[in-house]
Length: 182
Image 1 (cartoon, rainbow, N blue to C red):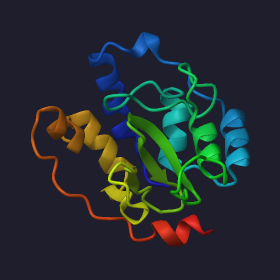
Image 2 (image 1 turned 60 degrees about the vertical axis):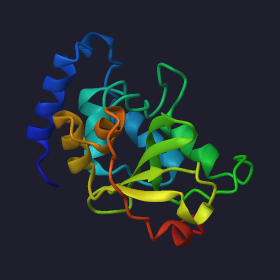
Image 3 (image 1 turned 30 degrees about the vertical axis):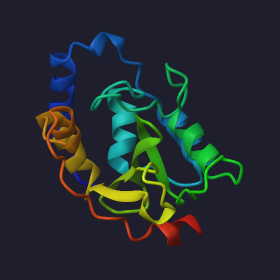
C-alpha cells in the first residue's frame, strides 16, 4: 500500500487552517468501515479508508466537503447515496456504475466520486445536467491522491469555477456504460 502519511499531514494542516478541526465528526473504527464495505459490496480505495479511519467521517474537503461514509452529520451518507443510486428506482435515467462511491455532493445533482475498483482511486465527476446519460461521467482526477492535493493547494477545477474562470475540459469516462451494467 502506498504511503499517504505526508498527504494526510497536509490535509490535517489544511483542516486546522480552515478552523474546522473541532467541528469534524470522529474517525470511523475499522469495524465501522468493514460494515460499510459489506453493505457496499466492495472495499473502499485504501486512501479513502484512511481518510475515514484516521481523519474524520467526512466534513472536510473542497467546498461542500466530503460526505460521511456512514452516520453523516448532515444526514447524507456516502453508503446510502451509493445504494440508492444503484437501485432501479433511483429516480433517474442514469445508471450508476458499480464500485463508484459518491464522496462529495456538489449540488444540482453533481457528485465527486471515487472509483474504488481502480488502483489509483480515479476521481470522477457525475454531471447529469447536460441531459445526456452518455455524457454524464467525467474523469475529474486520475487519482484520489491528486484530487486531494488539488484540495490542499486550492488548484482544483472548483477553485477556477468559483473565481469565474473556465475550469477547463474534462474527458468523458469511457467505462461508465459498461460499469453501470455490472
